[in-house]
Image (cartoon, rainbow, N blue to C red; front, side, top):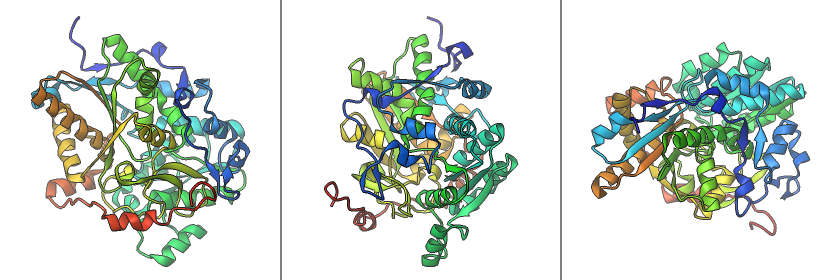
Length: 459
């Protein structure tokens, strides 16, 4: 066989035309979400005031294995998809490893990340329902940028609550969102009851994704014919992101490859869930047994130090409760550069798979992440997002272990996006001012001790 190309693209005809719903093949379903008003399992109708109706149905569907991608969504996907599967030859050579390293690069669009895959779908369903507008939150800005793009395409007004520390660190992310017509508000803000309460208790609050979610939901439910959309964690988002893994698996099959290890960064779980979906299907069905590794920041270690329990998805405690690995919705992540990975909980789907032993998780310190990011950038000519660089760190470490053992493993990781709006973080690293923050047990126990009580389930 001839040498595998550095970059391999599927044709448009080879792109998936259906999303894959991993829940349909899981041996056990994730625990049901809980209605905070009744403290009983939520029904699909309970979600209609917050989510688009068709998205709410996708959220609750644990049986339909494949769901058709609407033609309008497919047409916009084709503007930037299929994305390339890249063989990291230069990195392999520098590491002197017998391992083969592949990455799926999702940064070839204006948002610079994988987030556009779900943003297009969610904006489409909002347009299809005839909504007057959408609200959302964003951490590092990738999701807000992607949704601004998608809403501009479908002609839907959008309000974005951006975590304040990122709002201040990344002014050009705000500028891009505004270019596409998004209204951007630093969170916590004085525009919502939740935001005002948080600022009252902590006027210097740097914000969190949980806080921004609360504000976005409050804004949506108090505005006529508006709905809220979310870029991670939810079942519907992992469904849309399955295009990543489906494209990857098809490309690897064409190249005669299959990964021994699949690695993804993990904050809420959208990229990781999308990348691993078809490989996890193989694992569940006994067709193959790849190791699947989630990599999270040591500063926000939901998997590795969190508790598998029901929790709210937001600080304001107005969302349904989900069974997930969580640090507690009151947990305040440090204002570092882990960006979109600064979220207190993990996807219920991924949490269930991790709890049942189908995947592993590791936590890495920020300076080690940027060591890997800079090494990768110099060798592969892509400046990676800080989030993506967590997966790069783990892939490099895995390749170095192959060097020691002599094993020629095939390593696959997700490169979720680019870091061109993260130059404050890169400057901090190169200037030597970047520091690692690892929360103490006391910090974690403080928020975990306030997990909600659910009669008969979690008391």
